Amino acid sequence: MRSEDSNVSIDEGRRIAMERFGLSSETRDYNIYRILKLARRAYGAAAVGFSIRVRGGESFIALAGADLREPTFATPMCKTSLDQGQFTLLSDISEWVGDLDCPSLNQLDLRAYIGMPVLSPDKRVIGVMSLFFDRPIENFSEEDRHFLNDYVRLLEDSLIMRGLSIRDPLTQMFNRRYMEQQASIEWRRALRLQVPISVAMIDVDYFKQYNDSAGHSSGDTTLIHLAECIEKHCQRAGDAACRYGGEEFAVILPLTSADQAKNLCERIRREFELLAIPHPARGNEPVTISCGVTTKESASEMEGSSIEKSFQEADEALYGAKDRGRNRVMHFTEFNDYALDDR
Image (cartoon, rainbow, N blue to C red):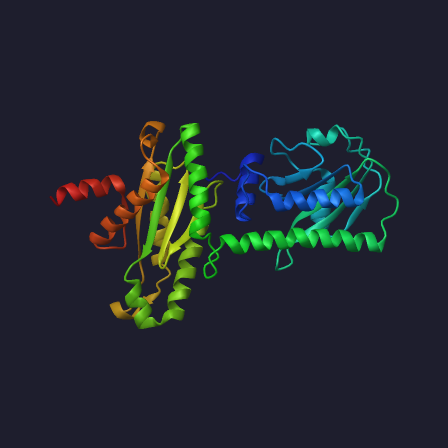
């Protein structure tokens, strides 16, 4: 079930980090592996890897020249490059060989290591490209470093382009297309593992009136504030939140029961209301949100259903929350009861 414990496994930590880049932990990213293979061939390395910071340490997300079937912590050499944030050449790594967390690297007769930091657009160190050699490397010329830097830039550009393709330009949340891809993955995982999964739809109340009275610039700012509130509460592996369209947002919550999903949405609703953004068309009362939630607690509930139907149920529950007065959270089971009461 859902837990907020910060002590996550390497597998979960890796998934969380990869999903932030829009990468799947279940499939290889063609562009990243192509760049690593090109660098391995150019420098005659035994293996070339790309590792990133994850909760609990550092982890490989791609490794050319060695097997990476299971999530694994990166090597101490990778950590050195990450911590220093600069080019690293270790001409003798014999003290580490044979005792690495990556079994396939232990099978190689490694002698030397070169690491180059990978940077985000705002120049933060987010990972490292690592070259592992089965021969001594006593000297690495400036020209060699220059060309290695080109491979690192290719890796950075690939991550930037990946980010642009999956993010909403205003809120920087995932866009609807990426969200639907991730939702399908998490639905299949929940069905396979027989664990609960919840979906939530969130909408700003009286947003058209707010836009018309406060102006579109203020409307955009309000959506950004809401996006920040949502993402603050959706930090577990598999959690995915997106701008679904206009003022509507969607959230996928694996390993989350009905009560847990309702409570999470209630925290988002309450936190957003406490921002006290004045609504000019409603007497400067705070701008509020309504939330609709649906949950599949077991495999039997999921059979005959689909992730698309869950989105539809969450949207219907959202309609029920709006119809009951807005500024509230409603679960689909409550909506069914509410709809029956109205008959």
